[in-house]
Figure 1 (cartoon, rainbow, N blue to C red):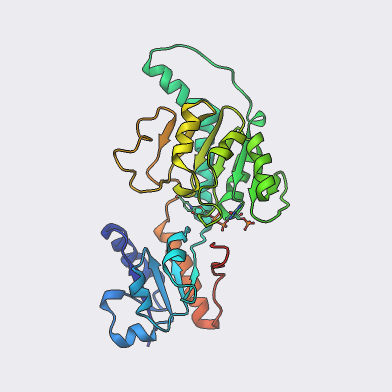
Figure 2 (cartoon, rainbow, N blue to C red):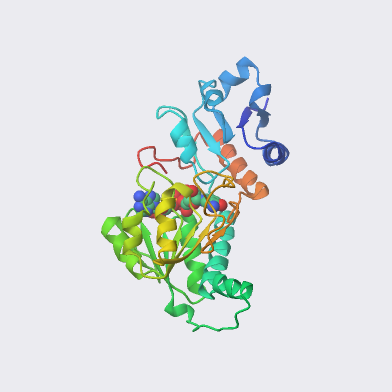
Length: 315
Ligand code: NDP
C-alpha cells in the first residue's frame, strides 16, 4: 500500500484546487496525497511527511509523528514563526525554474529603472517632450542584497546584460564577476555605491526593518530600490520619507507588510512607487510539484531528508 502524504493548506480555493490536481499526478506511484481534513485519526498519526502551503499550525500539530514538512513556497517566515522549534523540520521549495523567473523579473525592472521609464511616463502625463542623459548599463551599479538561489541567478542575468553588479550576504562569499560584501560594514559600503538596490533575502529577525531611515541616509542620492523579497524588510514610513525627500528616486515594490496592499495605503498614490501584486516569481505548480515528488520519493527510498531550514538563522 502506498504511504499517505497529507496536504495541509489554508491557501485560496483556486490555489488549493491547482495543487490538488498537480500533486497527485507528480506523486503517482510514490504516495497518495490526501487533504488534511479527509484523513482518519490513524492516517494523521502515521504521517511522517506533509506538504504545506499556508497551513493552519494546529493541523500540523495534530500529526504527532511528522518528521518534516515540505513547503510549496520559497519564503518560509510564516512557518518558522508559527511552527514550534521542536516541531517537524521545514523544507522550503527550491526550484531552479523559480530562480530563472525571478532573474527575468529582476532584469525587467532593473531595465525599467535604468531606462528611466517612470520618469518618461510621468512626462507623458504632462505632455512634456524632453530627453535625459542615457547611461550605459556598465555605468549602473546594481546591488543584490541576498546572494542565495534567486540572488545569484539574478546577478548573472544582470551581468550578461552589461550591468555592474555587486552583492551582499550574511556570510562571506567569493563569486566570479561580482564584488561581494557581508555584515553591517559591508551593507554600508554597498548602499553607498548602488544605483539600484534589489532585495532578495529572507525575512528573519535580522532582516526585519533592515532598510530604515539610517540605511536610506547611507544610500547614493537618487538610488532606486526593487523589493522582491518581503515587505517588512523595509520600514515603509522611512521609504516614503526617502522618496518624498528626493534621497531615493523610485521604488518597485512587489511585496508589502499586508497583502493585498490595503486601498488606504499611501503607497498607491505615490508617483515614485511602482506597485506589483506579488508577481515577480510565483511558484509554478508543474515544476514545483515535480520537485516536491522527487524530495518525497528520495525520502521514502533512502530515509534522507532534503536540506531543511536552520531554525536559528530563520532561513
Ligand atoms: P536563499 O536562502 O537561497 O538565499 C538567501 C540569501 O539571503 C543568502 O545569500 C543569505 O546569506 C542572505 N541573507 C539572509 N539573511 C541575511 C542577513 N541577515 N544579512 C545579509 N544577507 C542575508 O533564498 P532564495 O534566494 O531562494 O530566496 C530569497 C527570498 O526571496 C525568499 O526568502 C523569499 O522571501 C523571497 N521570494 C520572493 C518571491 C516573490 O515572488 N516576490 C518568490 C520567491 C522568493 P548567506 O548566503 O550568507 O546565507
